[in-house]
Image 1 (cartoon, rainbow, N blue to C red):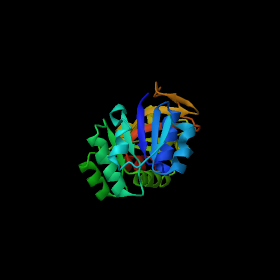
Image 2 (image 1 turned 90 degrees about the vertical axis):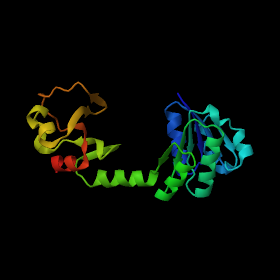
Image 3 (image 1 turned 30 degrees about the horizontal axis):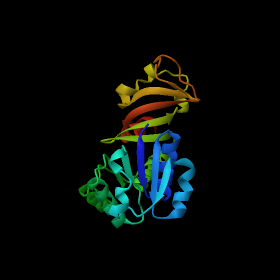
Image 4 (image 1 turned 60 degrees about the vertical axis):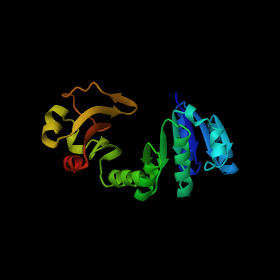
Length: 214
């Protein structure tokens, strides 16, 4: 379990708070608007109304005590920048800041953000890859063009084994698990026939995946 401070409770911040709560983490939620704080109170450890660009308010949060501080402010870049800088000045251990554009990311990094995320761009990339293929069900980028994919099994693969398909040699992709309903099989029998109700968890590049599953 981690202690996490979220500043900015727009849609992105609220979704983060809810998910972190579901995962069992302790979450302190902060926003300048009372209605936004009231909305998240049922699923955070605590919530405060305050202006994160004011040093006197930020000092009351004890930011050194949080494992991660997330700056989720999306509609006011100046406030996001000032909040990020204040967090680092006050000794925050790890600051994750939200950016909408590359220029924002550069300024946030220069002002102390340990990591910058692009929710809209990342979702757009996921959507484009997910819905441009008939077989990609999920997609998680790992960097350098490589990603983890959940793939449905093509009809002409049903009844064949992974050994006979020889995906690693022919297509440069690696199958590391098979999903069947809620069951994740990691101890794969390469000679077992594939079933239509299964999906494959694979690692590879988007180019190789497209070529293999086209």
